[in-house]
Image 1 (cartoon, rainbow, N blue to C red):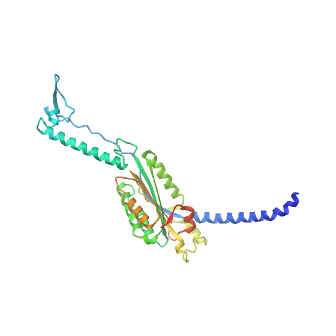
Image 2: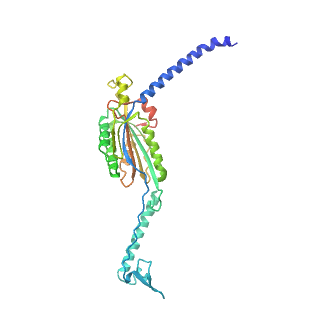
Image 3: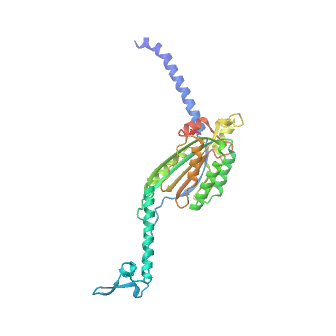
Length: 328
């Protein structure tokens, strides 16, 4: 029976082998193309809880610092160093005025804390050593003709002071401004936001950053925590010289070639970026992420691919590596 079935199965086996060979060659070709992507990045920062310093109030001495307790002579008065009648304004002098000012100050702090609590922020980072942190990511797919934007990213990476929060904030503002000034290059975009406690936020931030960095075959420009590194794009150059998928960049494939910029931030408090469904949503997201103040910014990573001159991403690369991006 096997001899009878073999002639029928044999053509099917040949067909399956041929299909498998074609798929293997196709996927191998795609992997080679994706592996040739150069990338650039800059950023820095750290996820550290604020520390509290306490300075005891020096004792100034003098009779005004004490009140007479019944039957015990002079004893320290816990009510702002003045007797209780003076505190409420009966005793006269500066004690009543001072107590009133302190009472108003405490009341103002309580009102501000209540408002921050209602808005969802942490009341006091000292009282809560593990406050809420937002991790937000914004990605923009640009036409490959956006060479001005790529030059801006190269310039920011090489000149930014990524070793200080002020320098990171300035680099973030320059990056978002450069993107906002060139909406004619916007093609794709996507956002994601998540909240975590400070003790676990760094792990989530690093996970997202590593996921983006893994899409590069090599980082040809890097400035992280003021450590500037420049490398030549050996992989991209080899493929171009060999006539690979990057060899025909001067052809009429301009609309099918792209640059992808990724902005990843970690900040104190709550940040919710809008879902991207239009260019207006992208403009609003860029404005939000660029307006983060230096006292809230904890960490920043700006990544873009490709970075090397003459290297581009194709439509297949966008689909394979950035499936969450949407047309704007």
